[in-house]
Length: 189
Image 1: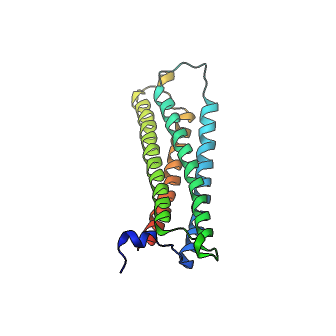
Image 2: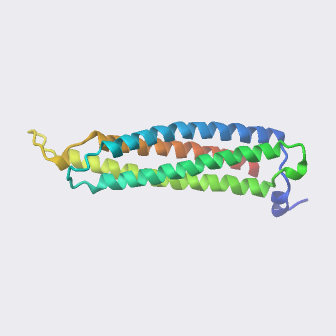
Image 3: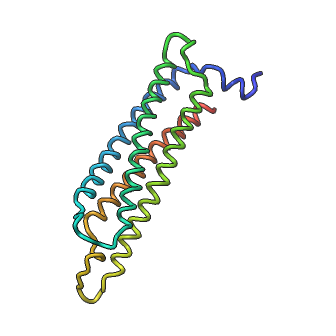
C-alpha cells in the first residue's frame, strides 16, 4: 500500500478527469473573461469619465479604482492559469504516460489558481466595501429636506461604475475559486 507522498508523486491518468479538467478550465476562462470585460469597460468609463480638472475631496474613489485595477490584474493572471489547466488536461490525455503530470503537480497548480482567486476576491471585496462606503457617505452628507449642491457630496456615475467593476471582479474570482476547489477536490479523492 502506498502512503500519501507516494500516491501524490504517481502520474494521474484518469481520462475522465482530463476531460473534466479541460472542460471546466475552458468554462471558467470564458466566464471570467466576460466578467473581466464588464469590469474593465466599467472601470475605463469611470477613469476616462472623471473630470480631472474638478477638484473634489474624494480620494476614496481613487483608492477604489486602484484596488479595482489590482483585482483585474489578478483576474488576468487567473485566466492565464486556467489556460494552464487546459494544458495539463491535454498532457493527461496524451498517449505517452511519461508525459502525464504527477498528481502532486496537478494539485499544486490547482492550489495556486485557488489562492490567486481568493486573493482577488479579498481585494475586490475590500474595493467594493470602500467604494460603497464613499457612496454612502455622500448620501448621508446631503440634506434630506432641501436640495443643496456641494461638489464633494454629489453621487456621480463614476462612483457607481467603480462599484460595478468591483462587484463583477468578485464574481469572476468566485467562479475561478469554485472551479479550482471542485477540481482540487476531485484530484485529492
